[in-house]
Image 1 (cartoon, helix red, strand yellow):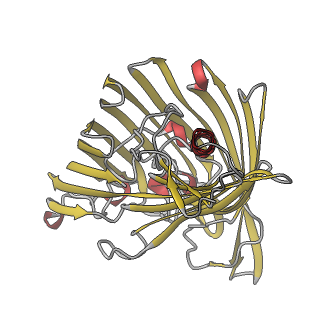
Image 2 (tube, one colour):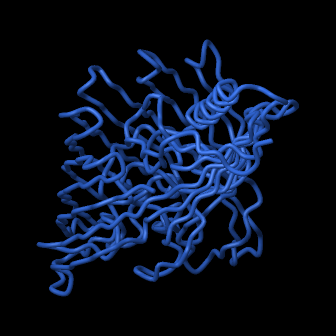
Image 3 (cartoon, one colour):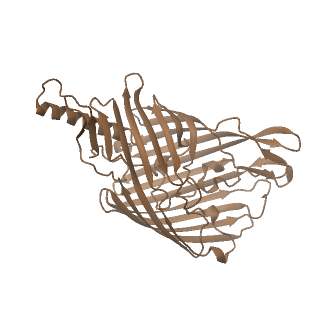
Length: 439
């Protein structure tokens, strides 16, 4: 009997490349192997190799691609029959940034937080940040009753004030039989529609917020067509004024989508998404509770017309959906009192779009990319206050280089602006360098 741990692979990092080949070299440790009662050494080695290959294939088949997703783990522990595999991994990420000709009052480049009016206290800023370094663990269970079950947990150090390095649970979910339960990215988010940026938040019109959710997804036609729908815990950010007060929410948000893939290995896709919301609040003037209907729609996609070129885009429109547009998250713009009658409350129309192109100079080794993103909040019966956010712009250009399989470096320039309802405007610029090492 062979007991303990047997090394069956050589560790190597995964390139951050969409639809990477499943032929990775993660180190697989097979637990509690048995020699099968007199099998030859060659037969045992062959069985072990097949088991290790099966564990790698399970992790690749369940791997997520897109914005801020992790590579396959460097180390995988698996039973000899592949019934259970556990992977552990992470990376260290350091970004050094310098803001000039206008600074952003945020560790990330968020146009909403750009100072308006040329405040001399916010012209320059230097930062060094490692809080987006990541730790994760992933388990794949091949169950005879439930099919393939995936459990995933990851964390970074963005849980407190800036530079506090407080641990934060990013996601914690389990998937089986088409269902996902736990904390995950909102279903309204198209993970593969966002370009890769040094800036942690990315384009201001994109959406990558987290939600506690129960989601169901199903694929048709050889996985070319996919649909999904979810119930998600609502996050409301409104301006209540003197006549209204916040109360607990009573109805979950309902996001849904339809997605179609085409091309080699499904590298291209288009997705149409929608979200329905009921926003509850208390009317202090009447003593009654009331609700507002909010909704949003989105078109997003990812295309690779040739091997060297990758395109990303999304466009969103809706009313009362500030939680689903990054620049407006937590802004208090889901609703405001009616400027013409403060005894009434109203949702605000808002929209945004982003588009970016990535040129793969040396595929899997070096690429450059650039893109533009814009968010706009429209007036409804006028505007609530002159300093209310009206528009934000986000422009980026960067270059990434893979020094080794595990180490990546990058350089990025960002320009952003914010305009208020009064047309007062502020701008900011940021130059960033990044180094990331996977382990």
